[in-house]
Length: 140
Image 1 (cartoon, rainbow, N blue to C red):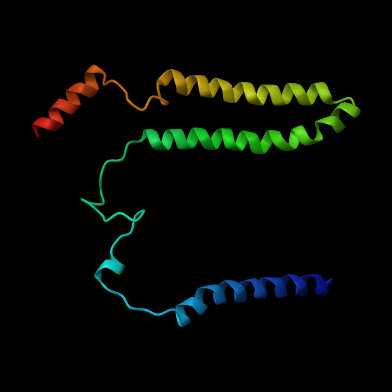
Image 2 (cartoon, rainbow, N blue to C red):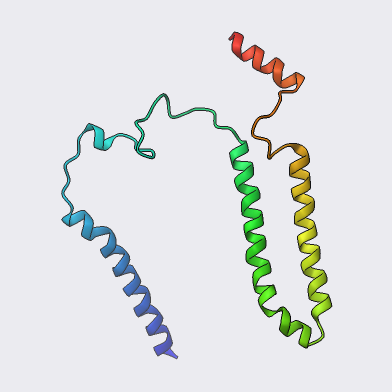
């Protein structure tokens, strides 16, 4: 029994050595010549412009979250599709199909809700309260 724990301990130590070595070897061998441009913020090859604290449109996050939901859907449904033939052979095909259909239906209702709210429209028209707030901010 102790040999099982010893092998796990050896793998953990070996993993720690590999990670530590991967971090420290470039630190020890790479040349270090810092200067102002090298120490500045780097974003996609563009020079930074303006302050770092700007308002970012929340719609990018909403679309990213919706993408993740449907990405997870694929990760859940793909294994079910792989073993669906076995379920049919055992007589559980209809139950599995109904469960997968309900899962897709719940996600479809969420997609319709997000679409109805206008979360997929990149250019939104401002409502009366949003317009008043925008006018107030522009006067300040």
